[in-house]
Image (cartoon, rainbow, N blue to C red; front, side):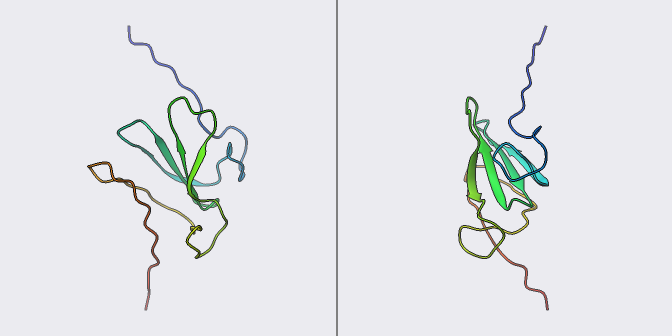
Length: 96
């Protein structure tokens, strides 16, 4: 018989900006090493959890909404390439 276990890595503590809270998560990705990445739209950050981690880690952002290099604005997606590169690209759409 196949046994499985589940556990929360985040959430369950209401909406908010603490490391154990979510605020409009938009995307979840699991990489080849089993690390979980979550984009937080309204917290303007990307979080990462690895197996055995006690604390969650901010990969990028978490410094409020803005245009500085350490800030992100309303994240909506996340993706990795097929060879495992993990880069954060930030861009603005220019509308005429």
